[in-house]
Image 1 (tube, rainbow over the protein chains, first blue to last red):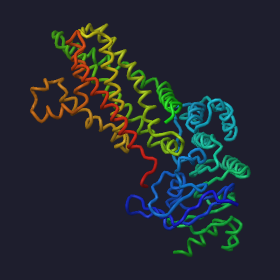
Image 2 (image 1 turned 30 degrees about the vertical axis):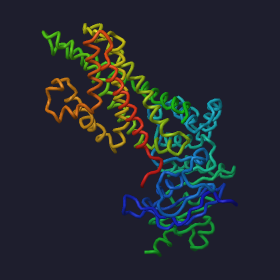
Image 3 (image 1 turned 180 degrees about the vertical axis):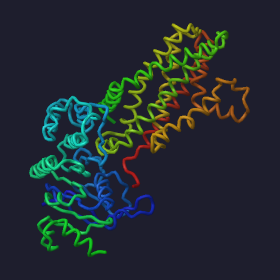
Image 4 (image 1 turned 90 degrees about the vertical axis):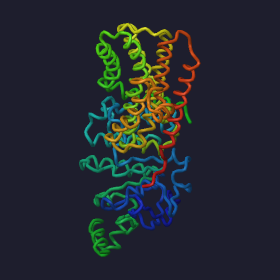
Length: 241
Length: 246
């Protein structure tokens, strides 16, 4: 299996003194749903910003599909859902999507088709004409996710896409993520919720700017001898203190 | 650079304004009201008002567009949308030009409305004619838009962005020749006024008011205003970063 992302000896210092990432080495497989799991403040977002090319990385290297992260060639292959909603609340759902279809470099002729597909995927077809600002927070988040789906990217990087959503919605979204991975898309999904780790194909546990484990959920449970990923994480976290 | 994306950004910015009727109303109603107010401030001094009103047409659009543009782009920076756009194929110049295009259109409309009220209802006479008056007002607004785009790069919050108005605009406002003729000011202030763009946008309106023929000073004024506006746009696009230090 080829690797979608290769990270070598990556260290990142934020604001001149806070070491957010410490000597990260990672190889992430293509066509999997990969979870970046860890407590808030662990460095998940910093790592994600590095992968999508929004961060100056002085030390170490990040390659995405064999190109340095942030290369212009990657901009049509990688899509990024930030932790902020990154949608325009004063536009309708439809207007937001139409705009981002153009900005993603997609031909406008296909806009209608693409928009109806992504709306179906996030189950918001009946809200197309609503102002985003008037939607519930879960619906806003799904609009943001729909935008990420627009260019049928090879790599989707989703920063906490399910935070604050109700369990049914979360289950639906994870089904969508798993389905996309099954079709060959690579997904990086960050979360601080351990029960979501269970649904990933590949698990990267992050704590204090370091990768403390990287394996499949089943393997991880086996290695730590714990019944759940959460118990395993606590065991590891407790052991390192 | 892609004209398709530049236009898409401009259309999107205008669509946002369309969904915000209150802002639109403020944009088009406030400048004429302020001018009308000024007329009654100068009650009994009609000549004085006739000299000042056109100058105001070089100032109001600039101030309003400066504020609107700097807040709008700052919102884009803080809401995460700029973050998302920066990982997409769009070039930084597309972004800046899209904003400049959208707000210049709004500014032009604002200038037309304000000038119509000034010339039609408030009976201000300008020797230079209606069209040069409009050109001056539209360019002043374009200048405000560009400076606003540039200034927003230095603000992290809306609070800061609003404070940039007194920083960027007030010194120019005080020294542009509106209150006291420029050659009557202290020397250092004259030097200062000589390098500030608002000076020239106000001077252009003076030229329109006082001269029936197009003067070379008028041409110089407008060229300088355009040059400042373009420089601010280019600097503005440089201040957007694809990659950030943490």
